[in-house]
Amino acid sequence: MIKDELETNQILIEDFGIRKGSRWNNNEIWLKSKGGLDSCIMIRGIDGSLRGIHYKHHRPTLVLMDDLLKEDTARSEAKREQIKNTFTDVILPIVTRDTDILICGTILNEEDIMADLLKGKIPGV
Image (tube, rainbow, N blue to C red):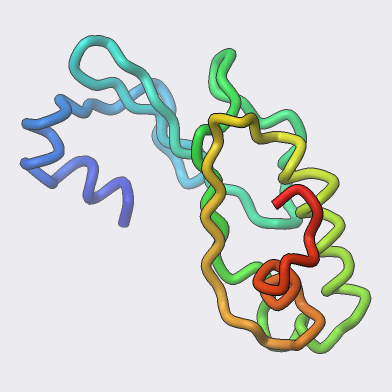
């Protein structure tokens, strides 16, 4: 969907001069735009390779996380803790003070990461 929008949305193309970059696959979309400004969209799962993520010499400026837990994994205390640990030990260290983090999701268990984030229980957020 994202690639299709970038290829066919004439407003985006005209306003930003977006063109395909050298990578255009399911995990990474590299873009070129007016003025030579390059950017990248990377797609990773919460249990994928996240450490050291960068594009050229840049760290992420936006981290968008959606539905970190599914209903079946939300029932498992071990899986809930694994997600929390990944967030604090891997996600938070890859960002800088210029990075925005947007997390979308539903509380599936009173002890899951979404509940803890809303209660202010996650340090560094």
